[in-house]
Amino acid sequence: MALRRIVVIGLPRLLREIVLETIRSEPDLDVVQDYPDPVDLRDVVRRARPHVVVADADALPLVEVGQVLMDEPDLMLVGLHGDGRQLLLYQLAPHRIALGEASPRRLLDIIRGGFECGNSWQSVSAIRT
Image (cartoon, rainbow, N blue to C red; front, side, top):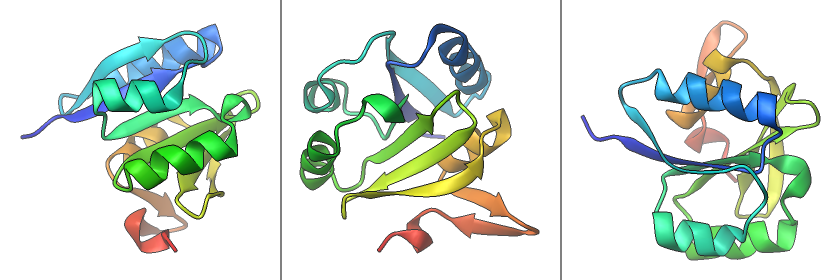
């Protein structure tokens, strides 16, 4: 099974520890870089070549997000908003989609390409515009 390469950027300490523990507990996910502070997103993506970036949504400039997604359209960029209660998916538009209340299970589902909405499974790629 191919590992999904994950980079974590700039999350508050406690939230970062929860996210890292959640991701590292899954055998198909690999945290290849962990940055406790905000960093240059383009540089990190170019060097680490992740499948997924999980970052503090409040520290992600939309211009930079748009540039990164233009360069890497298959990159999944997930933001945690506020105190970590909301997950956001950034897309090339660039805009972000609220994916509901944050939980370790929902974060793992989103990283793997989908999430539960009500009683049905939604593919992240199906909501891309």
